[in-house]
Length: 201
Length: 417
Image (tube, rainbow over all chains, first blue to last red; front, side):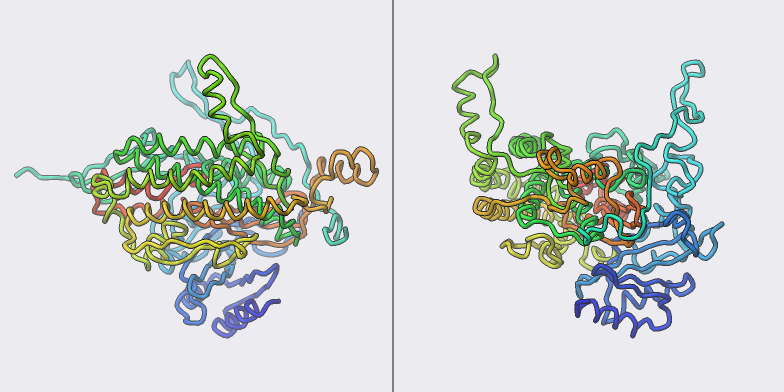
């Protein structure tokens, strides 16, 4: 582990203390996990603390862990993952927040800390159905007007449920159930550990 | 006196200045914008979800179709994410080729931006000049990858093939006689590197031509100076990156600050604006054109002297050569496994970011050990920039919205993904 990463993880531990549930350093990147109740406080420290100074929120995205490792996942299903960047300190950290309830996932919004979270959170709401409590304008953003469901969830089929076409009899555009068959050319496989490991040559 | 009420105006989705399919709901007080609500997603193709159903390498061509004005930079971030997950070394020559094509892509992108931005706000001729140079660079793309736009040239572990030794030439036809064709082919007699070098020698003069058209142009200045001013603090808070952030005076360039590939061995400067308005961002882009040209030159020099492999020889990731595959049992197995099942990526997650012409393009990839990604999230610069349109446009005239869309360098392939 390089000294910079050590310094960053030490600083994170010192400043945030018990608010961090888990700190992982992997492949040159630091990720921290924070419980939903502590997020706002943590985020404010991450931004305002003189030793951390994460001025920029680069990205927030939803993740659905339902099928992770083909069923080995034990834990909450939905997470909101943010990538933070400090321009003055030149380092990055990943902030993961799990939504405690799988049926109705809610995490606090980060918009009042980093305004750029606005659209990223709208996107995560649209695609995963993760609610961001306190968000000023939580509307759908990428899907069609009147879309039903959250398409990036793992239980949503890749071809969707409905398709749209022009109906000449009714003289308007109608929705109907999809008529194409789902097709998978290359199946998804998880092999035993170290299968095809690059290091094994 | 009659009561004056705000009214709402639909801008797009079929508006030529909307740079694609942007539906903008503008609330206007007379001609002054009170609120701008961009409705995006009309080009949403769920690239991230599609990537979950394809093997890792099959998604490389999807990346071209994100920001279809800077194709290879998108591929670069995606390949870099896979390489970091695999902990894979890329041959030095491939790194130089990547840097060279990243900069060619940056020139392509900025030329389009400056040309269409000019077109949007009244400088008709700009687009004719910039597309003249884009044509040459498109030919470079074609010579190296076979396609003019959607190259699919980068691969995890390197690039698809080495630079070709020849350039395709024009042939005589009923519109062009032998003399005209000979003149057109003058720069195409040698290898691809000769052609690019010839271009880099011509290019600074072209940039001077653009500057005579725009930089001191009174109308251009009236339309851009003082329009869409963003303070450095707001630029950071709104998640700006690339020329949008540098235009506001913050010196931040991933190529310098978090160098990837061989950017740390190459000399170049990072232009920074002062005022944070559309004009400063334009000046930044013009200077970036010159700097990219400088980087391309350095890469050509290195590439001429140092032949070598362009893709990793680890056949768990990159396919063996055709001859080896025909003659060798083990190579045949590798080839078969790679093209039927693809390679497996050890579990983990990375966020790989590159300095894309528009800003920071990041790929957040999660792998659970399968031959397909578990989740890929593409962080595109245009998305963050467009989300700030409301704040930037407030209080400006409706015509300035067009200037703002132009300066943000919006491409809907990457905003909607």
